[in-house]
Figure (tube, rainbow, N blue to C red):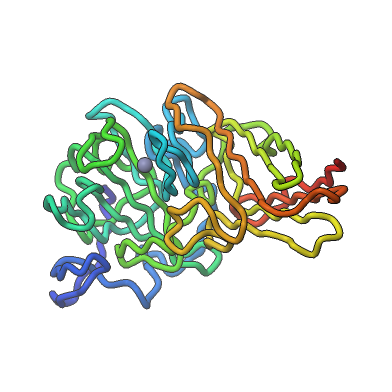
Length: 316
Ligand SMILES: [Zn+2]
């Protein structure tokens, strides 16, 4: 914990947070920039550390066991709005960026956030003018002495790994990143890939892409190592068909309304079954249509920050 002195709360105003709960100690920063006491400076992505190793560059301790995005758990499709790092109970968890703790909560059984278990939300300086916050779920304990309103620095211990809450029920840190919010509210539509702020493992982050076709389906198979998954947006363009499809894994464009249905607008997202022992992930995007006469298909893939990673036309 940082020893900076700050004026945290001028009064104890009741604040309604996204869960519907009314809290006294929660600071509502929803329409003001988070200020760490050094002004409203912009910080760069290199000010982010991985939450298990505390290092800016990923270490072996940071191995992602379940990445951001579509997944299949025991045959059930859902959309994972964070990354998981499996570690034994008691493993230290570190703040990913400098910031202020805006929420510490262990929701009661039967409440909407029960599956979060003991969790913490930290508000950070804006990045590129965008408010943001990180969340740390399933903790076994908070670091001694921390309270809502406290300021922490990147790399400060904030808690320990556990398996509180429900979910896949293994000991792991589930780490989330949100944009356009820093009040501690949990708003699904504002969750973004944590790989927007974390450095991926070294080496190419361009996935292996295989495009095939039958008379009724274009199949775009995307394979990537877990610690280099930065795919954010896929555009499938059947050449000459004027029937482009965009699937944006962050804004939800091209995803069903609740994000947890794999099919929208003739495109079905088909992930391989989740497997903690596998170090890579395969997701196939299946675009149904009448493709008997289709001669070629272009595929563009952008990373979570909008950079073009892949652009190739496959001829059938
Ligand atoms: Zn998770």
